[in-house]
Amino acid sequence: MIATIMDAKKTIQEGKAILGIEFGSTRIKAVLIDTDNKPIAQGSHEWENQLVDGLWTYSIEAIWHGLQDCYADLRANVKAQYDTEIEHLASVGISAMMHGYMAFNNKEEILVPFRTWRNTNTAKAAAELSKLFVYNIPLRWSISHIYQAILNGEEHVKDITFFTTLAGYIHWQLTGEKVLGIGDASGMLPIDPKTKNYSAEMIAKFDSLVKPYGFEWNLGDILPKVLLSGQNAGTLTPEGAARLDISGHLHSGCPLCPPEGDAGTGMVATNAVKQRTGNVSAGTSSFSMIVLEKDLSQPYEMIDMVTTPDGSLVAMVHCNNCTSDLNAWVSLFKEYQQLLGVPVDINELYGKLYNIALEGDADCGGLLAYNYISGEPVTGLAEGRPLFVRSANDKFNLANFMRANLYASVGVLKIGNDILFNDEHVKVDRITGHGGLFKTKGVGQRILAAAINSPISVMETAGEGGAWGIALLASYAVNGEEGESLANYLDSKVFAGDAGVEIKPTPEDVEGFNKYIENYKRGLKIEEAATLYK
Image 1 (cartoon, rainbow, N blue to C red):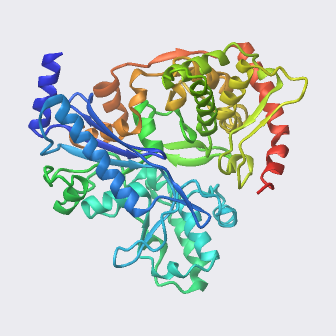
Image 2 (image 1 turned 60 degrees about the vertical axis):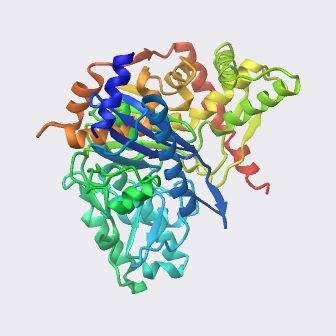
């Protein structure tokens, strides 16, 4: 153990450590890794989005305070463990929630508050663009946001000189480079798999569409430049170093890898960038990423086409809601325990409630739950209302209640993936789960296996999450050998054959989930009616 601590300290002091930072929905996390790609220090900052004028946002002040506080927490962790300071870094990577809309003028001023992926006010724009492009354009994509602003007649649009994602914005401010990793870029505008760049055809169609408005810009001029994993994305400027580390210890000059979205870092963190592999991220939101061998036979409204950080085509099913309502129920049980004067260990509480769910009926005894904190585009709902439904004849007990809420957390994900596996006959060799749903060993894994009728693996490293994933991309950018693919780098230098612990679905669980989901689909009319209640 002493040798490990000394090795880590030496790595930090010699400036060989690599930093990955990811902006999640509820937490900003920093992970420092060594030359063997192992985490040696962490930092974090909790934050929440705000509903302002009907739109979900994080303020610029919250973004920078969160980044600086997260880095300060990392510094404190390094100081406590190794009694040293971070002066130099070998490489840095920035990742964040994909999609959304951050638009700037020629003075680098943000024109409207950051509009996150969570907003569902872009239905008209997304529908028109999907028809124009003959390609599924989701509500949360950046191109939907900018076109909806145009349709709304918003004054700021004429002044745009650059628009990007959250990761692209942070990277730009740290390096001066207006670039974006291809995975994150594929959530702004569709990528041409041949050119590994934005679709020139779609850019031309969009420019023709908005020409009557008389803007001085063309779409291609205001988008960030697309980069593949491993490509040069700039270096940390003195101003960038000062904004990241307000203590002044961090020196400038280290390279940054292309900024990526959380979907791409999730693929990297689960070693799922090869074709016929996939991963499921399940936390505040959930999404599955299946790396395809070929394009789908047709566009599907429920399925987004994005890319891996090295440009392979990916079928993505993205769900706005996952564990937030489930967490709210656990918090209610916590309050009950506190009311009784019983000491609460929140991890123990989660473990007991999750595990009791496995004792419930495979079909949840007829109980239904809808976890829609916000709208859910996959099921066609622009707004959400968390909802629990039962009849007098259903088997209402704690086990079924918890199981129904766990099923709800991946129910929408199942609806989208059924298209891939049942209609498109997509083949996968391995699907890996990561995120908060899988923290209680074996439970979320078994639920997801039943939902998509596929074995699910979870790695010990999956808990490191996207911050570790972007750190690995930063490592690949400086340590990958010439001509070495990202997949080979991950296989040989990071995972070395570790496929994780696998759970296979049981026929009883699959049959039970299928029965649940049919009731769930029929009950969507109840959820829709509930959204009328203000």
